[in-house]
Image 1 (cartoon, rainbow, N blue to C red):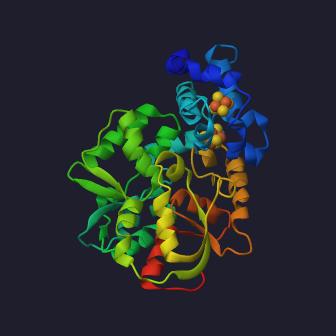
Image 2: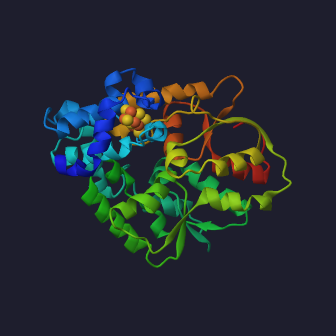
Image 3: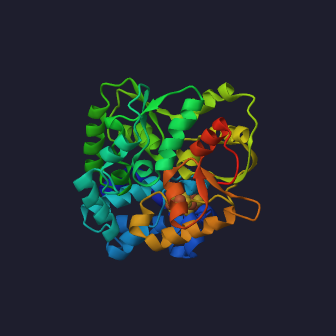
Length: 364
Ligand code: SF4
Ligand code: SF4
């Protein structure tokens, strides 16, 4: 166990000495009220395991997996301790020792059998949404393809309104492999990333819809030594750059609340683009704040390892829907899927933009 943390002993020691300045930022602690699941407590447990004072068993593994990977603790930590990375390494050790939670093992099997966490035939779904057109190759991500197809259609329609044609091809029908990385399955993730790199080798670039996939392509692939020859371009940035194409259109009368996805905020630092686009498209748009926009429970595999906590996390998001708001708007398909699973009224940012371009006003 020690070897995996040799370069992180300083961080482990800092957390052990810290009163837990990051605790208030952790959505898991917020949802459960369980102080054993605060970021500092999880790292203190990890420290005990690393120095051999505690065994890595099933109950310890459950604590180490009780994290959405949202990155909010790292954002506020005065010592710049990267808790999500420490927990990701701990998950790799759990996987090696066969102690990953059963839900994560089910995910591993499904990834091995079908190449995506939904067990879906992504090629069939992608072909059904394809228009056979010529355009820039679009990679929506498997969550959108398998669970939130309006997200895919909305992006294609919104891009068309910004004079940008997107096309789904055979490469669109795959998963970036992020779930394997989040599960700590590093060698499986590396193999998946290599196979993906071969699939896009003939392209110079491709457009990416899912912020989690964008993080995988731009950061995680590099971590495991896989370089993509094709350049991933994030759709939000493309549309923001073309906002002037839609200049002069009146905003919709929708009243929406923006949910800022963790990956956009903490890992891609993409904060302005969605807000600029929303400001243009929606007359009455309520911005989220760290208090009103916590994690939806869509990341870090928490819906696989701890479905009960994931349900509590999304239930907290009901506060986004006060009497003044008609729905939640987000640019993350995983968050959208969590909201829809909980019966909350939610829509993806791209469908809103497509409505704005076509001026289809009215209720959601
Ligand atoms: S992550 Fe930072 S703020 Fe949180 S317990 Fe560790 S040292 Fe303290
Ligand atoms: S990454 Fe998010 S969920 Fe995980 S410990 Fe930090 S604040 Fe909590």
